[in-house]
Length: 530
Ligand code: SF4
Image 1 (tube, rainbow, N blue to C red):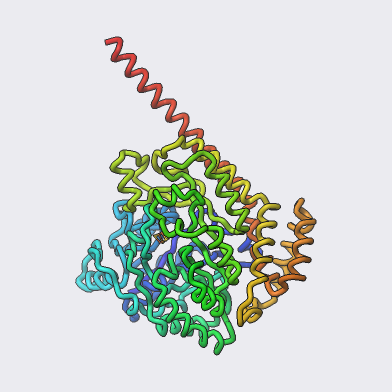
Image 2 (cartoon, rainbow, N blue to C red):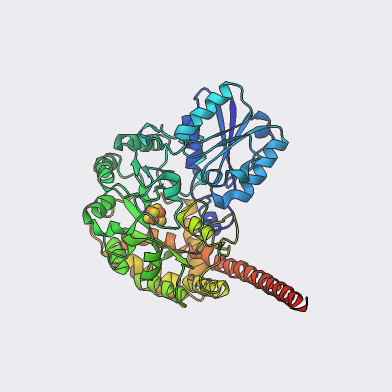
């Protein structure tokens, strides 16, 4: 069987970083880990070709070669996914679809022949059996059963074009023990974190090392520390591996804020060359956190947690959301104040969305407040439900706050303050982090950043002053510092896109509301007249 693995295109988003990637001659941030895992689970006598549409196009030769097309996508990729399914069908191909979007909203991908839903370790073998029986269509579900990920094979990293990606991805665990009301992870993967065995993940790292990867790796777990005991066992084995291989990689991941309460875990992560962590902070408003059942964020001071993690040597990125029920006016400003106080450079900021099948979705459906039976997760879409305060007020706060967060001078200042704190962290392997090779592309990127931020923009004095101070106080961090400064090349444009898209949708929303109200009034008048 000749299988074309097809990864749909992402729209421009917070994480798309087109301009920053262009500086480094990369085409996408992360590779499609799901599809290379699918390739490893399917029969190895089958032939595979992978086309990531964020990196390149499917050629006529690829279409001609393929007997079966398998696609996987997240909700944010749905437009391109639907187009590619149609295209493959028009070319007479058998099409199979899986991944989080298809699992959450299978009726939206019904044009595909096979729906391989839930987790592939269980449903891919069912699909292979159906193919062997000559079945031309089918829906494969795990019916609540969750696979033991210790049996997941090493992903087929050899199918990836390494030079195209800024970072590599691997996965240690699935699932999260918490129960945030808006979260779809616990719906997709459950609340009992399942982890791979330490030697299993080391095998994946061995393979990446053997294939020549020597840069950053993102652990794509939604909560890397969901099972702290197993994470510590893994880090214990990762440490000598990293020493033995001379720290060939640096790592980043996502974790819950209770990471700050475990200094031993923080130290172990830093010693294994973890350099950054993404935290789901969501909001500094305690009432909203309680309402959304994010109780783990209410136990200790959130700003103390961020400071503890940064002082331990991990750069903090964090997610924030506006639009919770009962939220008081000024939530946007409170988020900006928090981000400034804690000097978090990269703050992902979104309006709350109800994702299919989440507890939030079901509550809003019961209350008759869902505005759409679909969902989209990005920074340029209005909320898909009726909030408890006026939508236009939330949208205005959101646009203002987003714009404020990514004002170039404020962003550069936060980044500088953050890296000064990072510079004060002490740990045994400090200075041994994976050094990025200095090549022509890196030099050109540095010169471009210095030109744009140090000459062209109004931030020029700030840029040179901060760089000078960084060189004096945290010379080992200058490379990463400039890497984060480069993100403003993306955010400075993106904040304008967010403003334009949200304001257009608010205008359309208000026009519809006025139309609906006028219609209701006309009907009432007509009733009175009768
Ligand atoms: S901590 Fe993160 S992954 Fe876990 S339930 Fe909450 S939002 Fe989901």
